[in-house]
Image 1 (cartoon, rainbow, N blue to C red):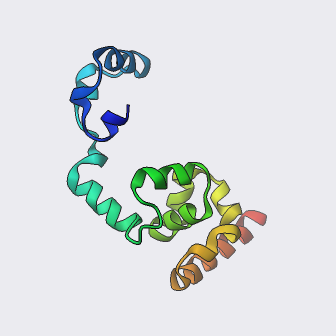
Image 2 (image 1 turned 90 degrees about the vertical axis):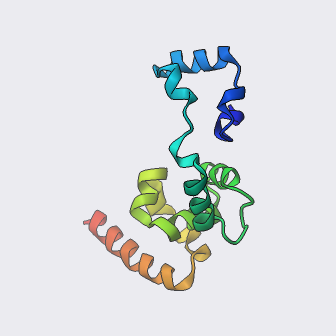
Length: 126
């Protein structure tokens, strides 16, 4: 599977591709195509946007940290894409945890997000 995500789908074992095709109901031909988010240009832009400071060595580490709800990773996603996009990606728990991870967000962006968070909290409490 890691070969696939590194863009080396040609080296996947045939039985694995067939099994993935069966499980996901996707034609084998589709599985052989590179994932759009992993083309060189998109991958480079995403790296530059999300891991420019090397807090996370690569996008895989950032993804694992997001899955583990690492406050630094969640803060990075929220800082770059906003609270609503983070909610769509990670779930509604992002709003409730905002006070926990907001200290990892750049101060100027954090102030803007705090205004939005405060509005959201008052709206949902009513």
